[in-house]
Length: 276
Image (cartoon, rainbow, N blue to C red):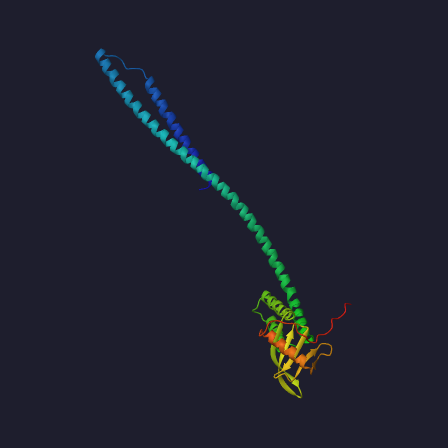
């Protein structure tokens, strides 16, 4: 039952109660106004008057009882009517709130549809961008200081496989590419020691590499017989036969492995390029 039907029903009940009260009141007044019956002797007249009075009193009592019942029923209907009015008022407020919520949801739905359309466009544009970023990263690794080449090249190859995978989302692919760039960026501000091999003295030897950011890449063979550094300009390894250099490289390896406290190192680094 909606709000209008409930309001109409209550109004009908209140009107019926009021009409019943008026009807009973009119009947009681008519009974009181009725003329007395004919007389047949004084005693009989008194008896009739007494009987009529008792009957009138009983009828009045019954009429008053009916009036009280109708009044009580009317009070109940009025109280129920007021309660229903409060319910109706609450429903109207609630309906207004729901209408505002529906309007807001429709607005959000429209924005979501627009965003979905824009995402589709972005996905078509971001895939070529990621491929260009990946190729640029591979080229940068080949031109950079040659440290951890196998690991860095392998990372690029794995990313190329991810780009061709259909079960990886565009967002996950983009995250992986950015992560690879972040790793390369971190190399420029860290010091690291790792093992590898180089052609030294006509044979391949195991050496310890010392990377200091991207400004210096040094090596030292096991036992300290061979020492040297990577020359960025010549793009070649340059041997160094100097006990002081050997000691500095050994000291740097200990610092990188956290075996000793950080300290100042004297190592060959390229001169800074002048601003163009």
